[in-house]
Image (cartoon, rainbow, N blue to C red; front, side):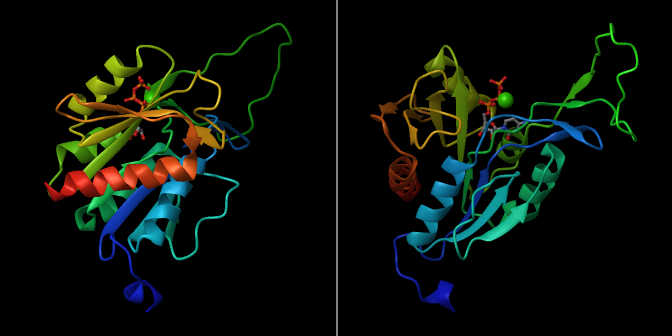
Length: 225
Ligand code: CTP
Ligand code: CA
């Protein structure tokens, strides 16, 4: 009842946000992961809720508390995130994929903890490529407005623009994770918005809540046309 009564320009819209990083197990006690904290995705979920949207937050492991009234789906691996996304995608109006998805996973997961037997030996983990969640969603797109993120350390605009095309996105949020004040586990971000028509909007350094709020302004404006 609380949800139905709320005001805001996103009232009635179903928004799916993915956040934090996925993890791939190596053995029962170890995993391959990344430095994503979930801050950007949780900020987007919070801002969308404040504007009246119905929010599903699909999140990898994160120390953060999800915003109240979000439907939270907790996942660990990329495959689990893919399945969770596919389950809600048909009913979704806006998808914002802020998660840092593990691109690779160990080819096999050891049943028992891997022991170090010979002190002089190194060790090799063979990894296979994970499915691309966003590309999968882009290929099935109907009414959904699809927003991706691009974390880059070089050739930001070029790489981000090619992701818009490859994944059939309506918008991408590109951030140079090598800049101070941007990217993983910071409270601020420095981003550029790119669209399929080639236009670019560069934002100054802002809090992740401010980035989230402007991002939703742009999504709402673009959806109308
Ligand atoms: N993404 C995804 N599934 C993957 C990898 C990435 O859904 N297996 C999504 C991310 O959530 C993000 C966007 O795709 O919204 C771009 O992620 P990024 O890591 O920047 O790009 P990749 O396509 O994985 O390419 P690369 O890491 O090689 O730059
Ligand atoms: Ca990647």
